[in-house]
Length: 91
Image 1 (cartoon, rainbow, N blue to C red):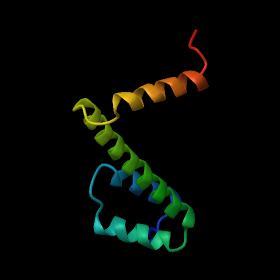
Image 2: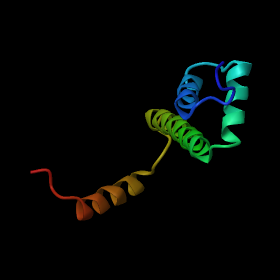
Image 3: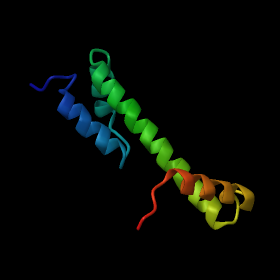
């Protein structure tokens, strides 16, 4: 019989699947049980959640940039100058 809590590898696979689809009740239960004893996997889930949120935020920023909403021309110039001062020339 399979361990009801699952191994770290199994939970990692479930976390990856959760990025693409809704989890089954069994998968959700397995993760909750596993998280109750494994802080490493819980941390991994939190990291994935943070990355997912950052990705969504980036999509929003890109959409805003395409629509003309975003940084003012003055702010863009300040950023360009700051980057020139701190980044090596590409040549």
